[in-house]
Amino acid sequence: KLNQIPALLQSEIKNSGLFLAVFAAVLGNFNFGYSLVYPSPVLPNFQSPDADPRLKMDTEQAAWFGSIYSLGAAAGGLGAMLLNDMIGRKLSIMTSAVPSTIGYMLMGGAINVWMLQVGRFLNGVAGGMTAASIPVYISEISHKKVRGALGSCPQITAVFGALALYALGLVVPWRWLAVAGEVPALLMVFLLAFMPSSPRRLLSLGREQHAERVLRWLRGSQYDVQSELLAIQVNRQPKITWSQLRTPTYYKPILISVVMRFLQQMTGITPILVYLEPIFKKTNVPLAPKYDAAIVGLVRLFSVAMAAFLMDKAGRKALLYTSSMLMFASTLTLTMISHTTPCPPGPAPPNQTTLDFTSNNDFGSGPQTTASLLPIICTVVFIFGYAIGWGPITWLLMSEVLPLAARGTASGLCVTVSWVTAFWLTHAFTHMVDIYGLYVPYLLFTVVCVLCLLFNAVCIPETRKRSLEEIENYFRTGRNFTISQAS
Image (tube, rainbow, N blue to C red; front, top):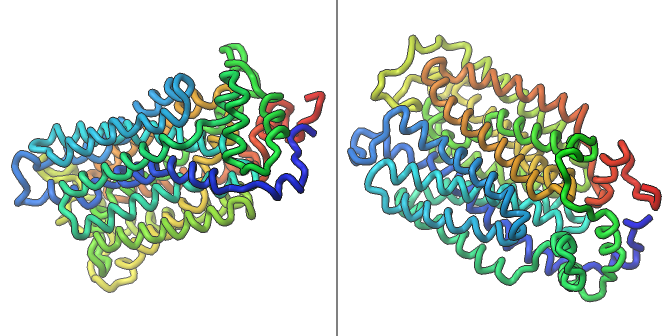
């Protein structure tokens, strides 16, 4: 079997270079997580009565400020479709620092609303580029024994970024929050300049000797790279044509990846994270919303760390089952709680912000009632469930199952679909809450969690401890991972 490496040689793998390269890359995901939840502590400054008149936001402007990031991320995903194959995964990640830095500069120095919106859009472009490029880069430089754990690193560092934003938001003014966001992007560019390119991309360019040096740097000087190089070369394919996309080898893994990214966003994770503090403000939980948001950030961090530990032990499918069930239970409970109160009589007045901090409570009146405690408990359970399964595993599986010949372009397509969905849902969320309260969006998220459970059962393969070449062989041969001379 061409993909097997003797146990003796496996034991001689040194991961220090690999870990350094992954760390440099996932700084882009730290920036992604930071910028994604930027509106959570910042929106109150633009919604309060004493806000600067030039920066004060009404309902529609607040909705755009929360959702335009996703629109920019969709554009960044489209750009990554081209850049991943034109200049490579590493340079695509480094390029994302340009729109990110400009976006933060615009928001930090904003004197009117349009500067905030444009800056937020550019941050989204950078987020879309990193979301499409970093998982692919990590999967292509990793070996199968650690790929599951390292594949969780983008989600872990994104959570670190969000938690850093929540923590800084407690003490730092909103303009300085934007300035601080430039640091991880610039550090990422500096470190990645010294990191290697993907050996699979180098082989696709015919640079065999360079690929061998890179692989030896990533695996250690005592590692025999020839077996791994041979496995990659045997499965190397030219760029696919439109006619080839109609074969199961290509369309099945691409469809699985696209649908997973669609369902991931439809669970409601993006609007919940973006509007976390305003959502908690609509409840009577004992703590202030900003502290509730920080607690949720800590829970996300703990859960994605657990997912990284279990990814190569319990397997992808088991974690996805657990994730779907926890999200379903929590959103169903939130749906029932929010349905016990009457719906608002109609749309809010034009000048009232959608998620107003002085709005009526959706979950009860007494600060110590059970109903007042359930929203934060259910939200914590939802975040925990998402972060151990559908959060990190969707990123990982996208980079694992996509065909090697189409991985750069297809990953950009997946990210574009994901963020177009996130834009629509985040923008619609504010209006749904404005008209119906939280009941309707929570009901939608509950239904989607059931679909996630079914999709995992029927369509998603278990890729634990499989090489990228074995996974591609699974789709080529129809459910057979083993690579033989015949296949």
